[in-house]
Length: 352
Image (tube, rainbow, N blue to C red):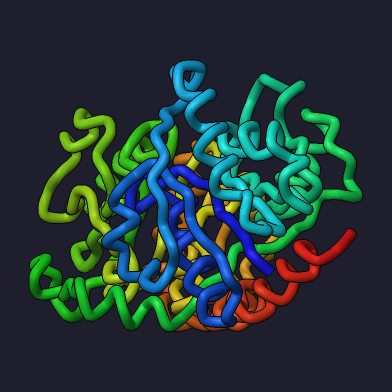
């Protein structure tokens, strides 16, 4: 079987590209013949994509793609003349191009990574739609009239061999961040902007840390709203953009994810995979994997009082809370198994 993955490749730290690294690495390991068509040359140097045939195609985001559509159709058309079985697209513009040329391959498959809006008449027309949680499946049925029978819920996979490759390239120690051995380290990993709840996260943690000397919060990610760095202090550390957030997961005790609107972020999956304590907003598909206080802690997005109470509870009951992290770790390893993901994906590829 021959498969083309058609995807934008914007940055190392995005959830979509984390997914692509894990997925393509796992498919390659299982001997699936495939190639990647992308719009960012950074893919050519990615350690996770070694031994994968990569081609560059120019396209942008939004309405600008009107100027590229003819060339993109020609480029993809030239790629699928050699007995390509499946074109697997990621995001809506690659899916649009794939489905215009649908008759040239046996099947089109698309992965929906997040909630989107508008353009219903040209969206999600592939033969199969993969989503990373039940929440997004319900959203597509309700808002895009996608037939439930062609939606497949596959929680995003994690390929553990990649951690070894990335860790050899990037290591962060507590000492390098001036963190003392007895300090409790909280971490947020992702884009630094108000949409992700960073404003109230910093405000609550700043107040919480006044009464708790042995705590620190690391904010690891691209600083989109630079005004948020006003919270920077010896207790709140902004690291800026990082290619390999796993290095920060390893040195932390607690991952905090306060986003107002997320589907099922890789930060929660990866930190959970490593057995970390999770405090997360009750949004998207997160409640599908975090249940009550048994394997993590949920709060209403934007609720400062709930978040502050959880900071106090976890810091005062750290060892008991670590058991919740281990409970989540067992579940995450089960639902993110790369071997199981590849098996399920192949069944989707091969189905009529």
